[in-house]
Image (cartoon, rainbow, N blue to C red; front, top):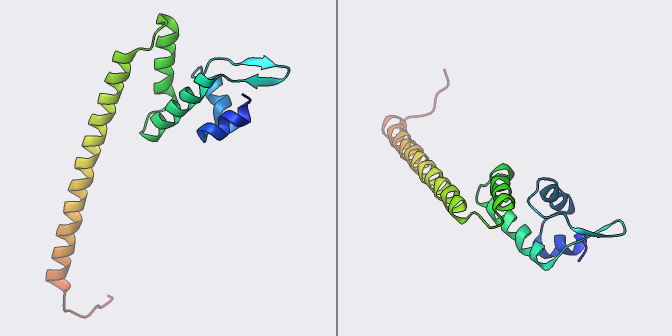
Length: 124
C-alpha cells in the first residue's frame, strides 16, 4: 500500500508518517520507483503510535522503545510497561492537582457569596 492509503487507514497525515519513519518508529518501507510501499503491519504500528501520542507519550519516548526493539530483536514489553506506569502516576498526580484547584475555586466562590452576595457592585 502507498502512503496515502496508510494515511487513510490510520488517520495519520502523510507528513506524520514520514516523520515516524525518519524518527525510526516505522521500518524503512520498500520502494516502487519513487513511491514508498508499506506493509499491513505498518497500519498497526502507525495506529499504536497515534494511540500512544493521544495518551501523552512523546515521539522521543516511543523512539526509546524502537531503539531497544532494534537492538534486541524483540519488543521491550517490560520497558513499555514501566513507561505506562510512569505515565499513569503522572496523570494521577495531575488529577490530584486539578482536584485541589477545583476545591480552591469552590472555596473562593463560597467566600465571595458570603462577603458580597447581596451587596451592590461598586467600582473604586
